[in-house]
Image 1 (spheres, one colour):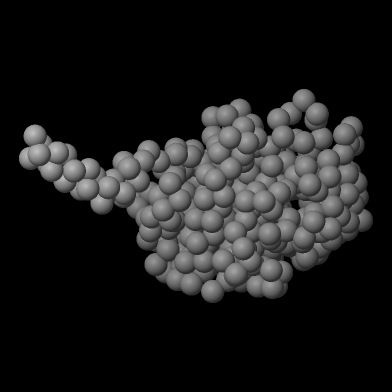
Image 2 (cartoon, rainbow, N blue to C red):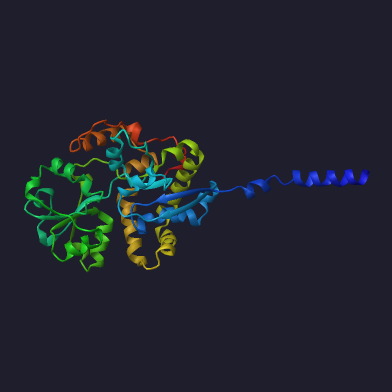
Length: 341
């Protein structure tokens, strides 16, 4: 009897000495993420975070799917098919104007400067916004950049009646420009730039009119979250944001290494093309003076309010949202963890 008690005591002592066992067996929280576009260079930070175990360290099992436009992700997240997404925050503003829509919110800014642009070739004679008058503009209807066209028109005094808009598909947008079938296109500048290069257009023949440089004072794409996921899994949302920021920091530090994580998921892509696309986006859209000062992920709420006002210049609000309806900083880690290193 005494021997049995001793054996039981020894067993309990062994179990007590293994506190990590339940943690090891703890189930990871699945997080489905809808990207805005294909697996191209600018998506590398998410895959870096997966490959380096940053999401898993936050208790998350992250899976990522490509998208077909920077607007689409909002509906995918609102439907509950995806917990998180990457989408145009200005389209989210319009979405939230409808009181019947679910309160999807942005939880982390990624493109502090939006990638929205008008892209043309030098031979078209387009070097400034007003030059678009009398020209043909190719624009996919669901394109996030095209969604800002009315603001661009108003900010630059363009007579829109003198610009012929041709609805083109994403796959043929740059080829049509290269072939001269349209005079200019709307798009995310780094994608259009590289796609034109792939269509044998020399870099010095490409003209990029960045919308933010021409009066469109908006933010770009942000990480958004499903409202139920924010409510019931706040730690998972915060963990996703924290891990994604780490992925971006690593990507900024070494894009040449980060691109390898993307290439694993898109083996038919050309490494040099996607690496250049990534570097272009990092330089112009990810890392800005505001980001260097305030860290990754945050927004200036006053600037966001101004951008909501600007969206309203060409969009008739019925229940105009406030900045706090669109973005929340509650899931961001401390500033020192968000600085560009």
